[in-house]
Image: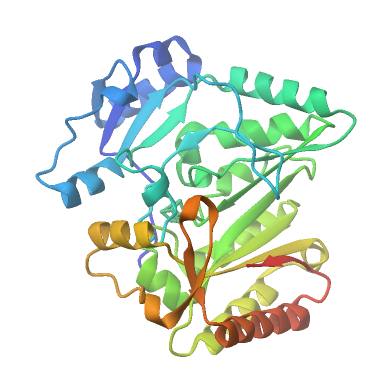
Amino acid sequence: MKVMKPFMPQLVYFEPKSLEYPLGKMLKDKFEKLGVEIRETTSHNQIRNLPGENHFQKYRVAKSTLVIGLRKTLKFDTSKPSAEYAIPLATGCMGHCHYCYLQTTMGSKPYIRTYVNTDEIFEAAQQYMEERAPNITRFEASCTSDIVGIDHLTHTLKRAIEFFGASNLGNLRFVTKFHHVDHLLDAAHNGRTRFRFSMNADYVIKNFEPGTSSFEKRIEAAGKVARAGYPLGFIIAPIYVHDGWEEGYKDLFERLHHELPEEAKNDLTFELIQHRFTKPAKRVIQQNYPMTKLELDENKRRYKWGKYGIGKYIYEKDQEHLLKETLTEYIASFFPNAKLEYFT
Ligand code: SF4
C-alpha cells in the first residue's frame, strides 16, 4: 500500500512582512534548507505567474504552492450551527477530492495560504470569547482548509489546540482527511478540542479523494487521537451510492469499532452528509477532474432549493431514506453511546 507522505510544497511564496514574525523566519529557514523554490510576493493577490501551460496544469501547481503571509482581517466569519466562529489559520488544501467545496469557494486562487501572525489571531479569539462570557464560544478551524494537512510544517494548529486548552471560555473543532497527527498527540488539549476525521467507504476514498490519506491510515490515526484523550468525531461525507455501498459503509464502522478504545466510544459524534452537487460545482469538477467517475446526473437526483437561487441535487427520497436508515443502524449497533448530530 502506498502511504501518503506529509505535504511538501513545490513552490513557496513569502509576503515580506511575514519575515518579521518568528514563524515566518522559521519557515524560510526550513524551506531554504530543503531546497524548495522560494519567491517573494508583495501580496498573495499579486500571484499571477504560476508555472503551467493551461488551467489543468496551473490548478495542480497552485495546489502544491504555499503562500506565507499575514491574516489582515481579524474579524472572524460565523460558522453556524456547529460553532460560533471560524478561526482563520489557513486557506486551501493540497488534496484532490473531486467533490471538494473549495473548488467553488476559492475559485481562481487554489493555492494554500498560512498565516504567521498567530498571536494576533488568538488575541482576536480571546476577545470574541470574552464578549460571550460566561458562555462557551466554539471555534471551527477547518472552514477553508484541511488544517491538519499542513500543520506538520507550521504547528499552528498545535498552538491553537494549546491556546484553547488553557482557556476556560472556548472550544476548538476541526476535521481532516490526513493521518499526519503524531505531533498533535502530546498537545495540552485538556479535552477542549474535538478532533474529527472525514471518513468514507474505502471505494469512495480510493476513487474520489486522491492526494489524501487512505482509509486504513485515517482509521489508524483516529485510534491514536482517541488514545491521546481527545474528544473524537467523524464526518461521514459524502455518503455516496456505489456498487456494494452497504458493505462498504458497514466495513467502515466495523473497523472503527475495532480500532477505538472503549472510553472513546462514550464521547463520540457522527455527522452524516449525503452526496450533493450544484450546477456551478458540476462545471468546476468537470474542468478540474475531467476523467472523474463521479455520478453527476441531475436526472437521477432530487432538486432542493438553496440560498441565493443555487439549488443542490441530492438523492431521491427513497434512496435518501435508505442511506439514512442504514447508516443510522450501523452507528446504533457499533456505537450505541455515540451522538448522531445530523443527517443532511
Ligand atoms: Fe477539499 Fe478536504 Fe479534500 Fe482538501 S481534503 S481537497 S479540503 S475535501
